[in-house]
Length: 149
Image 1 (cartoon, helix red, strand yellow):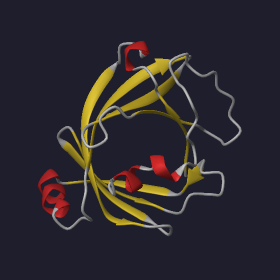
Image 2 (cartoon, rainbow, N blue to C red; image 1 turned 45 degrees about the vertical axis):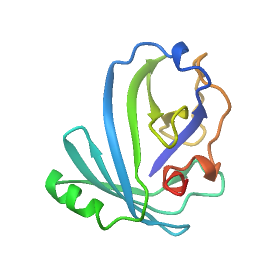
Image 3 (cartoon, helix red, strand yellow; image 1 turned 90 degrees about the horizontal axis):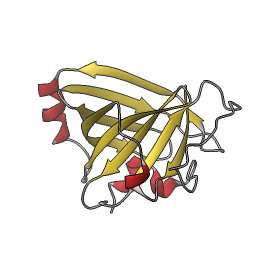
Image 4 (cartoon, rainbow, N blue to C red; image 1 turned 180 degrees about the horizontal axis):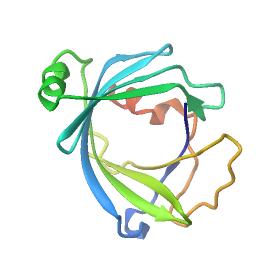
């Protein structure tokens, strides 16, 4: 079960220096209200991920992720729906939690989203000063929907 909250980051220059930055390219074999099936290449690793429908709050859903050979992932990209997501992912620590800050490339250049995975839906967190509006549950910010732009 994946439980996460998402926030826009209005000013990338306010984000602290990351512990690590990775390059991500991902595409979708399926993306609808019942399931999302994604191929992700993260630096030199590749993964197949299946996500179930989001609950009504947009906060949680079932998620299954498996490593796959990089060459298989590259080949499967040609089978995916039109549109890819490309982004840089920065890992930032704030008050003991690891935030993932995604800086999107064209055609979404300028879009920066911070995500935090929670251990349970009611987990209380202190937001870092560099996050803005919460967009948890807003479908326009789901990666699977961003491929349609």
